[in-house]
Image (tube, rainbow, N blue to C red; front, top):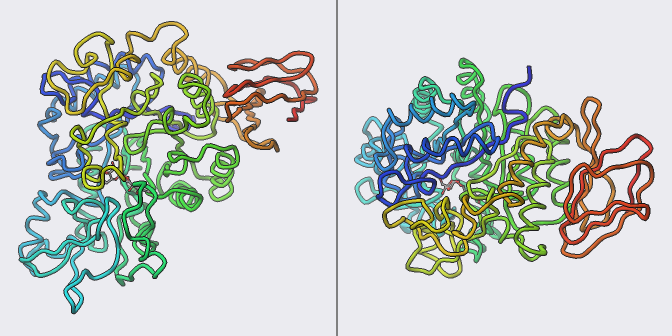
Length: 537
Ligand code: TEU
């Protein structure tokens, strides 16, 4: 039998913003449990919960102060177990975010580590002496701006942080750290969850030689206008030592049944696709991985083809996870607005594309409503890099505003209290209760069901058809089914010449008649056909 995750659709829940059950303005585990029927009704297979562990919330839970405790903001261990059990009753798997590369500065390990150079935890983090002039050991920069090193007066040394200064980087070269991390994972596996989303999986190991970025990199150390447009610390990521660690983690999860791990590769562009392949090739590393390649501004056929084909070439036995949105990037309807006829047309086009890709599919809460990025003013921001670099950096709050349930209820039914991020009118207008027949929500449910029912869409092999921009076209086939999927990635109409018998089994803004196929702006078609079929632009 095929492993469950291979053809799954995974739904990401951002707990702070899903459903508040207490009126404190922040979503919680009980709130999510209360909404499980809605999630099951979408037809998804699995829920990915963004971090719920004890945390001072400096980076909204991606700064863990106790890996073995649920943050009281979200509930307690009993409520977590109820959530898992209730999900399982509905046939839903649950994976949780594990933020293992760094901890919060409030973690006991770090509190001890920073006390002296010779305590038990002295080498659990990445400490280094200042250069003779007192400056940081390397020119590495933090992803959230500024240097990646913070000086600690008590130790008289710098510690490494790839993200906020309150997120010190664990030293994975220390075997005690690796053992402690594996224990952490075991603790949660023993509680019956179905796997992990591994945060920043290519950041675990640092460059022990402490090599500075070469001059070209150093020059671009200034915070770029786009949070995700910054240069890399080339020596300090995707270290070769990581593979052996991933293999140990896999060996641990293989002791349990049906566990899945999806790693977040913190890179964009084609390089990130290669890393996804390296981390998932074979059966002894991660089950699957995603990168920021499809989460960026690129919206052209060549880009999507390069991602999908590039992955297959690099890792024929690997498995990708594709998604267009998450809690770190502007929502796709807004991000790709320059290519769209309307928000609705883009929501449908993006959904139809995603649901036809080979691999596992991820959607992010609110995406199923065709949600747009929320416009916020400075006073409303909570995301540290945005607060620090506004307006050059807009940050990630705009995709993290609360889920909208009832259009006319206070805070659209998210909370009876003042929500941690505001619910605004354009977002509330897309609330679940306003989405009936013909809505984007109904479209997503159909699209998920269509993918599930189709061997070609859920498991088929992909071969791309040569087409000029802005047309993305490929054939997917499995068992007796062959489908050709054609997408118009522009707002302008495009005609095609079709030879042989064909039928549109699903489409939007698409017409097939004696003269051929026409795709209006953002139109698309899944065509069913026999062997004599061909299509040309
Ligand atoms: O994201 C990593 C991340 O956001 C990026 O820095 C990424 O490495 C870069 O965009 C690649 O171009 C994860 C979480 O998803 C995010 O919410 C956290 O803030 C971050 O790690 C730190 O834990």
